[in-house]
Image: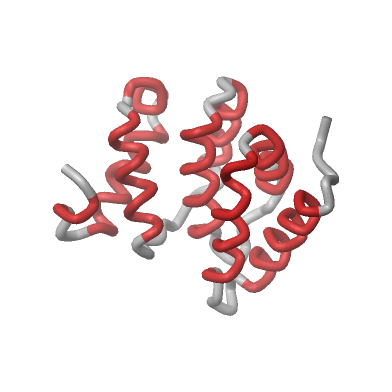
Length: 140
């Protein structure tokens, strides 16, 4: 299955995120499903992420699984509700971009796609992170 085969992308994205939230799913889902989620998010199937999704973020960071963390962080930035706390998300995004420079252009592009009024504050934060990376101000 690939993103083109998916009829209801939002439902599939929700199912994948629920599986990734589970302790066994995070570790056992193949990269194929991570790539599928990535394509669904890129196709504007946005998610309503929850504060518990920071646990997934931290688990991937701790495992130093930068590829999956890139997918998860794009999903998080794309699905943050207006009231979501940014605690940790900015820090992990900066760390990810310092460890995986190939992801930089993707996050910079994401700044241009976050257009809803609720997203404005998040867009500004993400732009600050991208500016910081561009200026070479990376964490040790």
